Image (cartoon, rainbow, N blue to C red; front, side):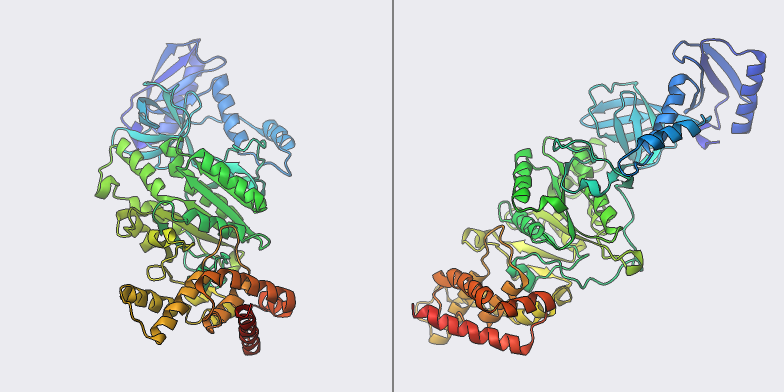
Length: 582
């Protein structure tokens, strides 16, 4: 017996005919057994429950009408899994073996509704995060529990929900269908396909909220998740299972880095999930077309909650994408998930919280906004071999205002993640793309997530660039520079130009290693800065054409031995001399 009904003394019975004495005895016996005390039975005539009756004890309802028993069966059939895409035999077997049960349904009523929020009274034992159903079939999720009412966020249209509408518990938490059939598809926050390619047949559901793997369930991050972007793979390597933040102002190339990383996973048996939060539908369409153009949609799932969608759908979008990622991760796959972007996600959650009358804190965000993102990003991990060895690598994106990384949401997410790639507006507008700021960017996994070849080739690149940036600041007003300083500046300018990379052109391992070894040996020292891009392109083409054995060894063995390094330097210097003599 629930404590909320301990003060109830009368049970109400609704049916089209009054119960006879024998039926009354059965009702009294049922009430005595269920509630451990005697209750009065108040019968009221009603034609609303054909083929049965409805018994109400406080907030608990026993619906033994045709509709009530059908609802029981429907709840069971919803959870019947498909087998090899064929659900009919299982449905027949389930219906054949089903026996109606006397189950109490806790039903409440709507107090207010609007802006994707409904306040409900009467659901006294409902749980936080539980799904509730409204009379028109709309679904909601409990997000606020008070002494005498609850607050629900709505996933469906609230036009047909009115004050007084009934609401019933489902006893289930929010879940998302998951399966291999999602690959290559575009779905909304609820897992419903919106790409016009038909229904997705799945085998099971995954909860959108799930505890992060514990320490024992994880293993160290030591396998690279190659982005194909030279400046990132060489200085801020990302490992499988890591969480690396991409942060910067609007229109500085944040999404471009994520897209290049997805494209670079082609042929590497990595499942990619792109979660678009609060973006224009046209932008998402363009992104999907770009992925199709580069044959990347075959291993990618796009989950979108556009700017026109209600705040509840934008709020659950990243959790839905994470649930899909966990399905693949727990089946031993490596997953790359992009959250674009968590700034808009925080704004959607702030909107919900204010509508639910929660107390605002700094910048009007609720007090649990840190937990909002920590419980999401902590689910990214590299699982132990005992659990299949799968991994989920997260690339959350955060937008800053005027480069302010000390704002509330950016500092929160920086403290959660394992490093950040900071994109600087000044570098972007100066033509340095990707506009990675070497000083503010960091990867806390470091060289552990690099191959031996890349680790050896990158050498002192980051230190050399830091010295160049510092020297550039001090010498920008100097008119007379000595030869040593001038050559060091020229060397740094060459490095910066070498790190420029056009979008949708990720570099392979051998290309990155050859460029790094050549550049750090000062091979490009005398190449004019404006010709560095052409020189590096021609250098790589020459290596792939005439020295493919070195390229193959670097790609296959991922080791740079001293002999190969010396040979690369020798070949590159000879090529540079011929290049200058043209």
